[in-house]
Length: 230
Picture 1: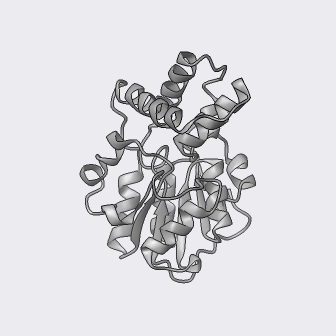
Picture 2 (picture 1 turned 135 degrees about the horizontal axis):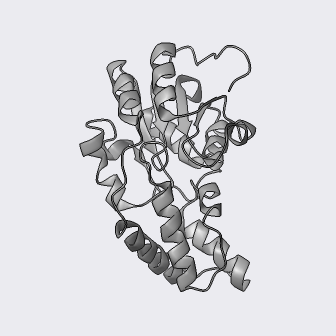
């Protein structure tokens, strides 16, 4: 989905890429882990809504749900302990697969000399630890933005601005690739050409409404198209 011919930045030097739902097909596991946690603490929620919160930090989600249910913010101890429990619930599920097309895209970017930077709102160590095995050389530790890197997560521009800083490029020299509305809003707010990718229940129009300059129907389609455009 795009309006007319796609016009990428003149010289793309860096690609800032989301993790959950973009590199890994992990969002269903995250949603189920969040729901299990919500049931533990007596918070009413729907599994579908956690797909919309993708990109927020775990602390932000816990605080939001506590305020919604109990009318008070979560304490720092609650944010830490409850997120650790959610992370445990995530790990207890079957291992997630690499998103089809993600490795092809990352490899194409590497071949073209484009620096790849991870920009995720997650702190899920079980996935972060897999990156080198699944995407060799693409996301070294010094080129990763995680939930620990910024105070304000997506949809604030901060994560993608931090990604630009780590890559050493201007916004006009980068593209952002994200599968969630909060992520595309973040990339757009940072002034970056933003690629939206449909990999779950959120449709193309929602990503476009939230700042995506172009939307692909899958990571495989994104890999094929961007390989040619770049």
